[in-house]
Amino acid sequence: VQLVESGGGFVQPGGSRRLSCVVSGFGFSTYAMGWVRQAPGKGLEWVSGISSGGTITDYADSVKGRFTTSRHNANNTLWLQMDSLKPEDTAAYYCGHCGSGFVQYCRTTNWREEFARLGQGTQVTVSS
Image (tube, rainbow, N blue to C red; front, side, top):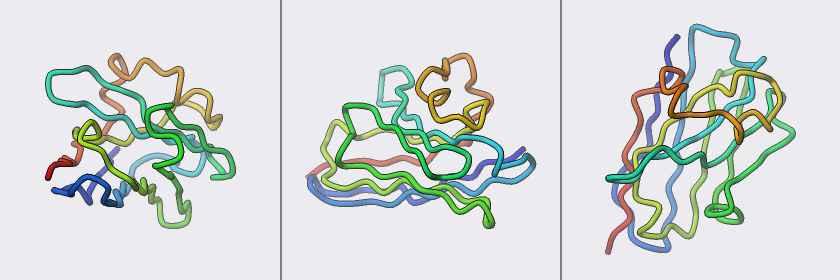
């Protein structure tokens, strides 16, 4: 199983960034997929989820209306479009499967316990 996140970097407040996650080694199209993040000195925070078919999405209140997740099952790729970025969005961002095809499992997964599902992460720093 391999998940490779990319797209992180430095961005000014109010800017945008698009993260990608390329997956191999498991049935990507059968799982809901999530993004989680870890800010410096803090624990893992669930950010978003998308159902296996890509038709249903769910977001944490802290990013709702600013972030959009999508996927392309044929290419085993997951994305996170981040707009109107704030300094508090600074974190390492990780992707992982949610253990089921249903998006609600992304929100309820204990990502601290399921850390092994995640990739190596990509750092996003929002600063002026």
